[in-house]
Image (cartoon, rainbow, N blue to C red; front, side, top):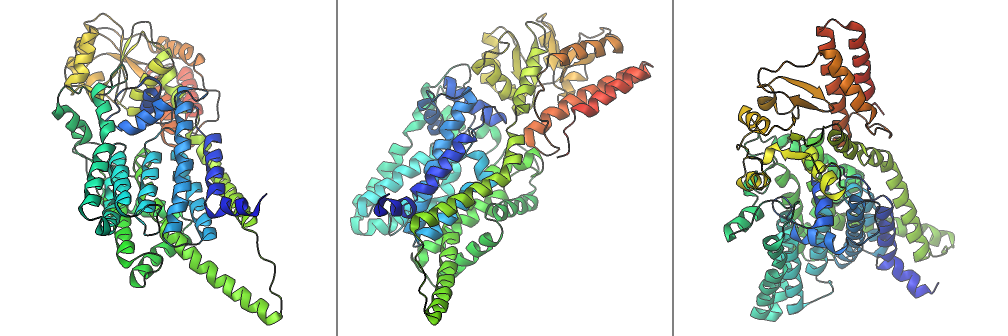
Length: 589
């Protein structure tokens, strides 16, 4: 290979970016793995509005790449996301170079970031955070003094990227200190024209929000009939604000800050993370590669996107809650790539100097290491780091969650109405019905959306009138339709008001005064249902997010059946049911 091209493969980051892209594409999940992922995979196939803040740019990206030959709609969306991941690594390499680090140190730094467990996961499944990473990398690159553009065009590009970023995920606003500094520095020479172009670029970048006005369809969230509707989606009014997941929930700020610090440390293999944090302070004290002000705004952005943002999350960061929060830890991890690269550069220069002095003293200059060979070694290291995450990745991307919602639907009688509460069952069920064509006769109602008028109105147009809550009134309204009614166990205010028996992972809700069937009949019906379930995969462990949750539901259902049999005096059958409970639980790895 021509030496010039082999050098560019490493110096410009093409080699590590290509390796990351291939890895992400190879590991792209063919299954839905959580509620947001299921919703976005459905929208990628059908179009429509996502949940607040709408994420129009990412949905449009998925639609643009919906022709990719994925094994399923979820796989196609994951492949489109893997492409964003590969682009992120390439741009991040350029950004670290523009901030002053040398090629080999940068290549090592971005390879570590690319292989970090949390980055690997969210670059291999349909999620908005891969595009958010690309936006952040572009801001770092464009804002640098050695970036690709200068003057008014630098201002325009930063404004455009900022607008596009806000049209994807609002947390990109937290790196505004870097972008604003870049615009101010570039605008000094361009005067008012530069600032005007930045504002114009920002406005153009926000244009994808117009998609929310025209997007519609069976998978769409909400209605946009007025500017106030659009603003409510963008500001996440239904969720209680930009950083709220559950309106009114407690704020475990210390636990979230600790969880964020743990993710950052693990993502950067602990010692480089400490070195990167120390290098931020060193560069602010004695600037190199960039100005003191640039390093200062970078440090501010790391703090704001990391511990400060984490302290505002009202989700307990354990189990599935940790998964919900960890997605937001990627942004500060990405920003740390710049100081980590600088730290590796300093360490590499010191080691090279020591070796050179030793060789000079021995009279042996030693052969130079070709750039391509060094880059190849880094790629091998990247593959080795990825390999350490594969067992965990395989478990969380197992078919368990998707099979869970498919099995839920398949167990129901024709024309049933089922009310679910959890996001994975709600959006996962919609994915199964709308994208895969699974049991379209079942009316799957998302209980958490009933307080919203638009959701109740959509069901009213389909002939099912419902009150704005999941209490007993809802059961009365659904039973009045004459259709079989079911509800998930996590809706106690609905279930407890009526006679009920388990079927699959939900309860059959019976009319008031009805006599439930005997326990032996309930067990027989469930055994028939479970024989048809698809469970032919490696079971998840006790802490594998939504895959684990799916199996907890199976086990909980059979635990109830075992109690019913025991109360009926059928001890042998109760023991068999309890044994099945243990078989269906998540298994220790």
